[in-house]
Image 1 (cartoon, rainbow over the protein chains, first blue to last red):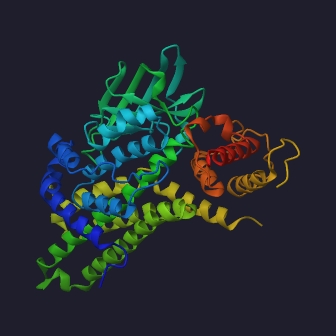
Image 2: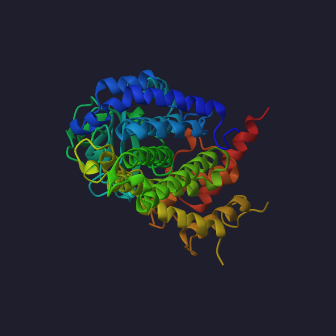
Length: 380
Length: 94
């Protein structure tokens, strides 16, 4: 019987991805977490495998095969959320560039980014601007030579190594996006260490001290970043994170089943104990539900855009919750083993907590879901 | 298709845009010339839905040349933008 949700070609590609991930990503995942860095070897492997930019459609306003793209994120995150994050962030910038970039900007950056010859970072968050993106304080001032950027961006994934930044700053008090070369004078990076999760995503604080950038760096319209760049980039981010959460939860389920099938307590294997069986059953059902919500979101983003925001918010909200619950259950089933240094479940547990926050916190997803429902119903 | 009494812009987009703002913002007193960004009527969640809604609702595609904030700032400006893109598309057709 054929799979009701995935084509034979998608399932074959998934097999190839799984082999790639098991060979090239998984062996480094623990070390990346401990060292708080993705080695160049991993980044090059991802680039050489052609994993950047797979979401892009032929048309500028369209998407590619988002179901296959989702499976890519599931497989990457099953092994390493930091590597998944590398692809997601790169693809957020690529999506904004593809949809809103000028011909000159696309010509300059699309190929190096899809080939992984340049690494991109998306610089929106600030100390005082997280969920409320309109609260950003970084400024851009038009000058005779272009624009001068001043301010600080915080928790910027891959900010430590990025060659290109997509930076949101206020121009004439309105949020505006700029493509900024990482080598520009006055831009400094302060690596952020000791994060709870996504520890190898090379987060940095980006300090801009009167950075002069050319006028052709503005992207998506002056004052229009909230209308153009952010929705495009964040849709990719939310979709990638949601599918990644499915992969993390699946990895936790497999860890838990493996442990419970070998570990004996009170003379009985854990897998034969009903309280453990209940945890396993809940994990399985929630992973399945999360995967279907992600699948639906991908379908709606391509075929039914009127309900895409609702589906996307639902998928990200549910999948990230399921990932954290699954990771928590896996740690609980493994007991001290799950809490020990080097525990896969513990790493996913820490990373899963971050998933509830990034690319729109779950509270923002809940607001979006409710607002979409009220808007579609109409008033009165 | 009628004309808006104040702007001369086709009333049909105006009506649909008004309805969207009304449903989304829960604000009944948005005038056609009120700047929805300057008056603080809209938040970032609304702003992020606006372009996608316009493109979907009117089957248009916003282009680089349309990306000026004033095109999105009032009901009248949004309706004029929809008309301009529609006319541009019509003139592009062989």
